[in-house]
Image (tube, rainbow, N blue to C red; front, top):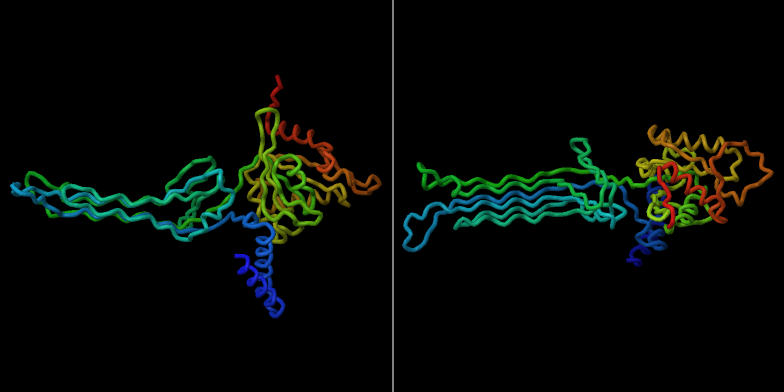
Length: 371
């Protein structure tokens, strides 16, 4: 696999140098970055949160026309069996997955057709159903009807995307006192067919928002067992990360870290805007402002503008305004003063316990007393 990736990387690199087509250069460079990410981090960097698939349930088996034939049983009567039902396409939410990568392995899912009935009143075998696994927080939309079918928010929750067709009736079902030899059978019904869009929105209680290199990943790593990529350069976070923060003995909450919001994200700059949907479900936002910012209020207003440009509901969520990297703060800074809820340092640990307590209070959690 890596040999093939190396060949692709060499070909794309030489093509970018030779061509002057801006569109091709942009696409090639993004693909080069993806290949490099696979080399460095493996499939962990392959975060897929949107995809489209087509599903087609199986057709029901046909009923048959048959009459019983056996020695010493004249005119045995109709015994045509019913067709089996077609297989269905089922989707199931599981906590074992974090992206939609498994759903992208195929673009078209076809369930098995039901088998036709047989003589001696034997029904046909049912078609095998297909169960598609997706992460918790996946929304399923019907592309043709432009409607939301289901929002999978619980582990183990299932939904039938396309129901298999019903099997047809054999001629045994049409025998009456007036018609004892019916020569009629019903064909199976076709299964449902749909064009679907799968969209993942991570489920978290708290969302971290900030400019690139504001210390979001470092904070998540300091508070939880999550291992996001932490580096001293902007845009080190390329995919959303989740961390579980314990509170008290039995309680906990989930925190989401998304790529930093660069100025102009609403126009497609940077990576943050395309991942903002992953904090739409949160109940609280923690806005991180670097202590080294020249103008705290201006930096905060820019972040709020980007949130409001994406979703008014997101911009109206309750929030905490936190000054990060207090260990690097310049006391003689002329930055405009601004009211912060808290000042923290993820490296030295300053204010982290107070931040957890403040978040828990906003979420309505109560710390249990140790006995």
